[in-house]
Image (cartoon, rainbow, N blue to C red):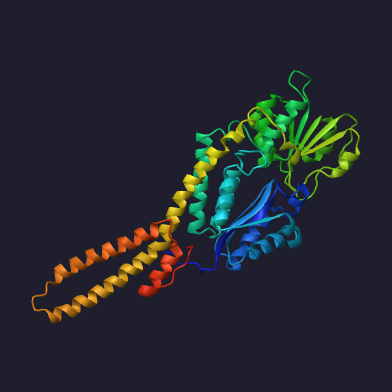
Length: 421
């Protein structure tokens, strides 16, 4: 069994989301892949035992163990463009049980900007996988994440919380459908950026708009070509960006760059142009709104798009919460068992040591002493004593930590931590 963490380590979730931070502020705290990697490496060097990081268009969050949440806040601010002062104004900090509950609500789409977002659980899986490769996921967090995945799967299959498509990429296609109804002249759509959001957006556009007049541009052309091949779409070189913008009616920008990639300086058209920015940080400069023919929509506005597949979702929130409660109860039972298992083993060892000493002493006192029977009887008594203690520790009405502490004091057992690595 891995060594236990010191008692003063607690499980935290810290971060910010669309709920209190606007797109610009979220952009300050967003982390690139390299930024996340560097943050995790520094955390490991500083002795953080377990940590996962997620940075999406709607949230940047850290889940992990620390002696104080400021350890995690400092790491986030050092590897992003945000400051501690800004963090304190719009962020949140949850500890232990509250942190667990938050991870469930995030992973199941209950805390998503579009209720029931099915993409977030995949992003969380990737975050935990990345940390595990670096040896930064302990048994507690791995088990917790598996429970979150289980809850997410059950909610998807047992409720209609995530029925139909639900994501920013879906909302962008829905917005186009509502503002450019089918039956009218087909619009030229330019998708700039073919990362995960771009790929999902492309799929939603083809599926829901049935518009094949979609052109893809990506800095790495072969990535765009792989996606275009699936949907029989056109791919242009990055050097042709300005030319393609001039030919487009709608531009969807999802490049994942840390600075704006589209500005008014590269727009050379007078016809109406809708630009949809699906990125955090913003990939479209606000100066495009200085052009009378340009309408700029950001993902925060897209998230407000409603659709008949979304209208009844709130009705399934109680059912989803019930599933989470059931799954988490199993996790807590595992956690309690994991907490007291080493103590119970230490107790049995202690009682066995006392038994051996008493049997050895009794052999010299009683001429007809039956060692085998005494040994068997003593073992049965030890099992019954240990069983009574185990049942007591399993009782949710009792404080497991207090009971373990009492056992340690009474039987002089080795001190054990609350959370194990």
